Image 1 (cartoon, one colour):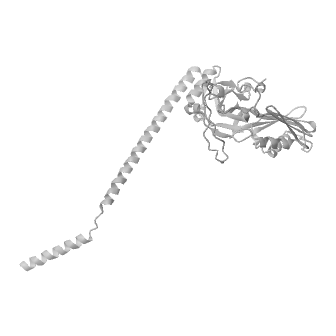
Image 2 (tube, one colour; image 1 turned 90 degrees about the vertical axis):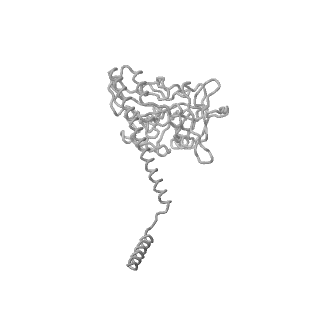
Length: 375
C-alpha cells in the first residue's frame, strides 16, 4: 500500500514539473509596455475630447456672432447672403513688390525699334527710339507713343486683343485672356489690361492701349513689375470678419442688400520703386460697388478709386515685413518697418534715401491718394 502511494506521489510530481516547464512566464517589461500603451491611448482620447469641445465652442461662438450680425442687419433692413460671411472669414494676404527694371526694358525693346536712347528725368526713365518714345516712372506710371508697322493692323476686336496679348507676352508680362477688355470706337480700338496679384484684382492698376489707324499705339496707365512677395502686417493679425462687415454697414447707410464680396488690393506708393499691396474687400451691393480698406476701415466707391493709398502713413497702424535671410538665396533682404521719432508708423524702411538715386520720386510728382477721386 505504501509502495502504491509512493509511486502515485512521484507521478504527480513529474506531471507538475512537466506543467511548470511548459509554462512561459511573461517578463516584467511586457507589463510596463502594456501600461504605457494604455496611458497613451487614454491621453489621446482625452485630447480628442478637448479638441472636440474647443471646435464645438468655436462653432457655437461663430453661430452666436452671426446671429448677432443677422439681427443687426435686419434692424437696418439690409439683406446679406451666407456666401458673404463665408468669404469674409479669411483675410487676404498682403504683398510687397519691387519694380523690375529688366521687365521695363524688355517692354521698351518690344515697342521701340532702331537706336534706343535712355534718359533719366527725376523719377521717370524715358526711352527714345526711331518709332516713338516710352516713359516709365518709379511710381509705376507708363506712357508711350509708338508706331508699329511690323505688327498686323487689327481689323476687329478679337484681332486687337490678340495684338496686345502678343506684345505683352514678348515683353515677359504674363496675363490671362479674361484680364483683357477690348472695345471699338470711331478711330480704332481701346484695349484695357487689368493687373492682378495671385488672381486677385489690383485696383487702379491697368494699361490702356489705344490703337489708331496705321498701327499708332498710345499706351497709358499704371503697371507694377516684379514678383509679389508675401509680407506680414501686424494689424491684420487681429482681423475680424464681423468687424469688417459692421464697419462697412455703418459707413454705407444707403445700402439695402449686399450681393457679394471679393478680395482686392490697392497700392501703397513707396519710394525707390517699392510697393505694398494692401488687402481690401470689394462689396457689390444694390447701390453700387465699394472697396473697404481692411487696414484703415476706409470705404470708397470703386468709380472714385484712384491708384495709390496713403494707408502706410496712418498712425493707427504699424506693420513690419517678415524677416528674410538674404544669404544669397535670392529672397528679399530683411527690412523692418520701424516707428519714427515723430510717431509716424508708416511703412518706410529704416534707412535714409539716397539723394543720388534717380529712382526716388520727386515730391512734386506725387501720385495722390487712393481715396481721392481721379481727375
